[in-house]
Amino acid sequence: MQIETGTAKGRDRLPPLNALRNFEAVARHGSFAAAAAELHVTHWAVGKQIRLLEDWFGVPLFERRARGVALTDEGTALLNDVGHAFDRLATGAARLRQDQFTRRVSGTVRVNVLVSFALSWLLPRLADFHAAYPDIDVRVSTTSRKLRYIGDAFDIGVRSGHEQGAGVVSRTLMADLRAPACSPALLRRQPIQTVADLRQHTLLHSASTRTAWPHWLREAGAPDLQAARHVEFEHAYLQLAAAVEGLGVTLASLPLIGRDIAAGRLVCPIATPIWQGPDYTLVTNTERANDPAVMAFSQWLTQMADTAPAAFEPA
Image (cartoon, rainbow, N blue to C red; front, side, top):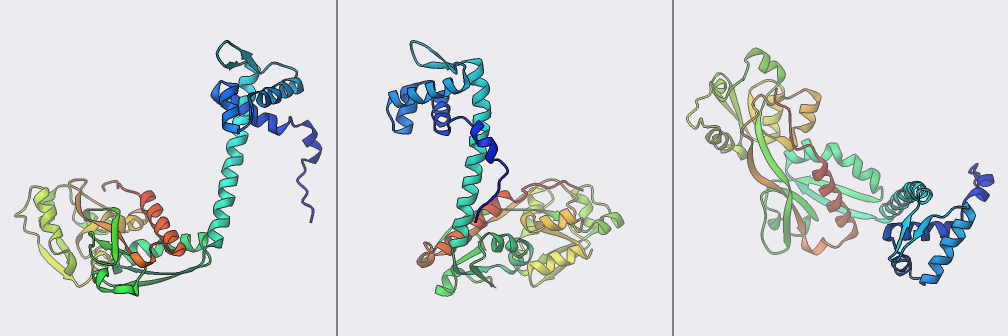
């Protein structure tokens, strides 16, 4: 099969490409000898390529000095164009190599995460992983149990706080920063401008976050604040859903409400303090840590966490 690029006639106008490679190396190092060492050729071979290029253009590209060389004005202009071309070529090559690598990786990854993390953070991003690794089957399960007690029923998981024990290794995935959050409609009915305004509101809790509000209120300088009402839910994701529906104010994990804030379903009315709970940690089954599919998912999770928004605009 022949591919028409529309540039065939222009190829005879290109300078010798190997000579360009030598030129770029000499320009970076300011030395024929250093360029020769990088390219694994002799000093004489580099000089020959530079003379070939100068003859092709009909202008000197370097000024020869006692110690090394310096670009002429023509050489400086050429380096700018050659540098951009090499950068684009390197970017395209890296992308192609990555695409080929990801399409070669196959297998199954068993992922166990907290329910709230699955619903609010992982599932909305999972299509991105499937697009990058179409041959990896991801099986998601949810539980709040310590992963070391699950044994070999998982490959990789996300938990709140580090886990230690035989058969597992954990590392920080991202910080769990928390701040009050509520629906815009609730805020319009009953504004919150200071911590004291929370006395007029219902504070939302979950069974796993009972101590979160007391921690935050102590840091806010109001440990004895009495809210109008307290409502507790069995799961944190129900607590977040209740806040979206305008049932009260929740102390929300900011990584979990990024989409809700962006969509206008939730707002954070108080900018400070930001309380940090236990970090979200990536927990790996040591027996599966070197599996290519598990490694790919671990790397992808880390990249997603690193690029997730870390800040918010207070309402």
